[in-house]
Each structure stands twice: as C-alpha cells, then as structure tokens.
Image 1: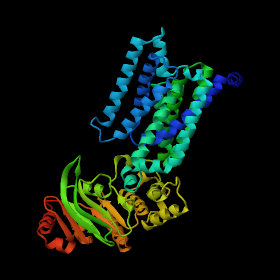
Image 2 (image 1 turned 180 degrees about the horizontal axis):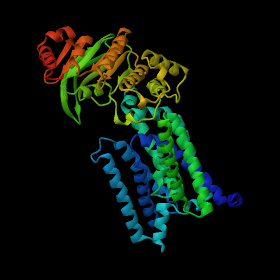
Image 3 (image 1 turned 180 degrees about the vertical axis):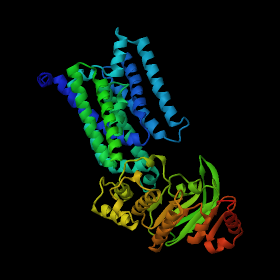
Image 4 (image 1 turned 90 degrees about the vertical axis):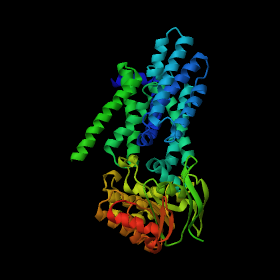
Length: 279
Length: 238
C-alpha cells in the first residue's frame, strides 16, 4: 500500500491536493473554535450555500475567474450575518436558515434554466460534494489557497488574545476598550474566504464539517482555550491528510471521506472525554 | 473633579427613553449602590455608563485621571460562558487586553498583574483549572479578578451575588468591601436592598421615584423608608 501511495505522490496533482487540503484544514479549524463557542456553528453551512448560489451565477455568466464573483458575495453575506447578531429583525438561526435554503434553491434553479453544460447533475453534484475538484487544481489555485491560508493563520495568531476576549465576553471586551465591531467584521471576512477555499476541498454541503468537527472533538478532551485551539488544528490537519490518502487509495470521494474521518475522530474524542470524567 | 460625573442623563433603547434626569457623581472611595424595581433600567444605566450603548441625552464625564476604557466591569454571566473551555488564568489575563493597546501579546507586566489579582481574590491555586468546573462563587471571583486587571480606580458590578448561597454572598460582599478599603471606587447594581444600605456610602434609586444621596439620607427619605419597609416585609424585593 505504501508503494502505491509513493507512486501516487509522484503526480503533482496529488501533491497539490495534499498541500491545499492541509492548509485549508488548518485555517478552518482555527476559525471553528470561536465560531462554535459563539453558537455560530451554522454560519459555515449558510455561507457555503451562498457561495454555491454565487458559483451558479458565475457559471451561467461564463466568467473565466469565478472567484471574482464568489468571494465578494460570500464576504458580504458573512459580514451581514455575523454583525447583525442579536439586534436583527429576523433572529439569528432563522436568518441563517432562510439565506441558506434560498441560495441553494436559486443556485440550482439558475443552473437548470441557463446552465451551459450537458451534464447538469454531474456539475451540481461536484459543487455540492466536491467529488473531484481537489484533484484538478491548477498551480495558480494552489498558490491562492496557500497565500490566503497563511494570511488567515497569521491573522489568527496576532489576534488570538483579542479573539479570546471577545468570544468569552463581548460586553467586557467592549467596555475595556476593544473595537468589537471592527474585529467581528474582520473575522467575518476571514471566515468567508476560508469557506470559499474549503468548498474546493469538500464541496459546498460538507464545508461546515471542516469548521465545526475539529473544535467539537478538541472540546471533548481539553479544557483551556489554548489547548482546545491547538488540538483542533492538529486533529484537523491529520483528518484531512488521512481522508485524502484514503480517498486516493480507495477511490472514494475526497470530501465525504474527510468528513467520515472527522466523525470517527469525534466519536473517539467523546469516549476519551467520558473516560476522563470517570477516571 | 469626580471619577465619574453624570449630568442630566437620559437612557433607553432604540430612541425610546426609559429613564431621564439622572444626576450623580462618583468620587474616589465612594461605594454607590443602584437599586430599583425590575425593569427600572438598572442594567441599561450600567451599559450606558460603560459606553456599550449611547446615552439618549445628557453627559457622562470621566475625570480624576480615569479614562473611559479603564473601568473594571463585572457583568452577569452569559449562557455562552457556562460551557466555555477556558482556564482561570486565560480569563483573568483577558482583563489586561485593554492595557496592551496594539501589542498583540501579553507581556511580563500583564502576567504579573493577573497573578496578583488572582492572589488578591484568593484563587491563585485555581489558575490552571477549567472555568466551567468551578462553583458559582469561584466563578464570580475569577470574573472579579479579571475586572481588577482592567480597573485602575473604578469597578462596576452588575448583581455580583445573584445565584450565590448566603455564605458565599457574605464572602463576596467582604471581598468588595476590602477592595473599597484599598481605594477602589465601586458602583454596584443590587436587588438586595438590606445589603445595599449596609455597605454602600451612596444610593441611587431609580424607577418611578428617583433618589440620589448618601445612605444615611436615603434611610430617612420617603422613597427609602417605603422600599426598606417593603423589603423587610418581603413584599417587594427592590
């Protein structure tokens, strides 16, 4: 099996997939910890559906670089959703659900009516579940992913103490001089960028798994914010690597394989957490 | 000049005034209790004092070397915090955030300050423990230590003893009293009128009747007499 893996690693597209997979897994897991703690687990889901809608429009408009449309639309939605918070007329979870299904519905409708391709269901399936797109990355896309992921990790490290303060107690942070609004906007922008990137890896429907699973697993076992964050990052990278390798060797779809690995790891963490409590 | 001066302040939500004509001042060493019925606007007043929401009229002035971001704040606990994975040290350190300015990380000075305040609150041994596993009283001590890291001269406490049992409540009042003796000015929202008149130097009563003055004058004022009597009878828990 190792021989087989060695053989596959000689192909550049496999190496690209591994590099991009690890980078995306790392940055999405970092964002996941504060998002889960702030009860924003569904934001990833909703935003990836928005991105699906935007992708459908981009496909119909036959844009050469789809990112130019998808990124701004997703970023805008993220800012609106994360900043409206408690004050909005439509309450948080309802707003998320509404935007999520509306984008999904419109996206498919547009593709169906104006779709240029003969293989519509194949295209939609690829966008939703990311079946093969990770193995068809161009060098340019790899660089884009790499730069954006590194920027995200850097921003997270530099803002780490602020992120903790605002996640734990927004009011206290604001009262002691933190610019909570600016920080939330920045966080929303980064989240949107990572979600669009993650769609390449696991597809639109499975994106939020990359965000929530590592954080949830880490929280079963660890009890401080720092250890949870570090553990989530490590788990996420390992699960992504394992998922991609399994999918290549076994010929399974990349996205769902990664998610299955994450779910298994969560189960394991849950058991470890229970054992810690008992012991 | 006083640490905090409130002039003809109006407070409320979405442009709707719920309380107006507030005038009071907090000087160094003062212990002001804000009392009043539920819904009178105690928490709204505190949020306005902290600049978490805009005043609808009037002014809030800080002076005597106190800047707006240097007020220590002990909020009521939120649902998010109940299962938050964070160590005691991480939480107390986050009180130093405002001092760091644009510096991204905490330096030795901030870490020392956090250690000092944990010792001051008697939670030095809990530093590595997980916040969600502590008792209610211990959690309040952690949040008070965090507030102390941010506070230079003034502490705002929002119902610091709600949900605590009588013994822990007494300990909490003792801690606050100790901080006051060390020179910290205190503003406290309280439901507990009998404790308010026992500990506070000044009372601000808000609601249908407004009262601001020293505790001694409050006890003999019409508002004070009426509410103290009701509180004793257990009729109104003002």
